[in-house]
Image 1 (cartoon, rainbow, N blue to C red):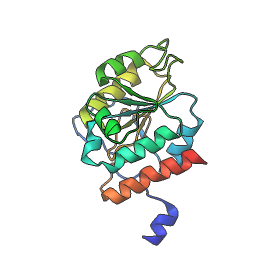
Image 2: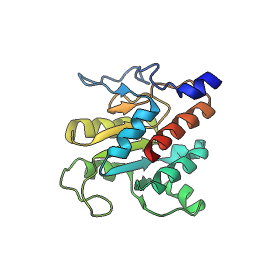
Image 3: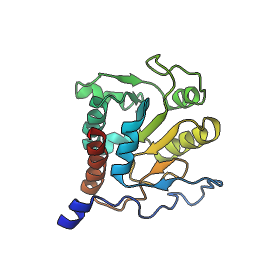
Image 4: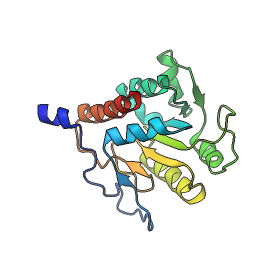
Length: 187
């Protein structure tokens, strides 16, 4: 474990679609190490973190989402997940919106964003049910190619640009991988 902690969690393994019925087309997501994903998010001009109700299955991930929010990344929380932020007393830069309307808005390059400051250049998905996230990624892949699509979930998302592989790690390893993303965003 000491050598693994020094190198970081390898999130590039097993880049196989989670559901074998997926047909991604000619463009498939690439798996990246957490430090690279964090550096890309940090360089983004207008990132948006989109979180869903699966965070309730792993409440530690709410704390990690809040940490990302404190780094200046606005958070789009689903109607269900917004309760987790309210319960933790963190509503700074958190917007409640449904996944379907958000996906629809993100398709249009002239959308002004949740804060009225303009379209986002990077969307980061975390804690969204797999089938919903896959549909959102596919929509953006096909209708707004100017948005970078990043998954911070434990599963490979074929329609994202950047993703972790299917992580058969323990929850602690998953938390460590997300911590590496956050650490890279702070550098």
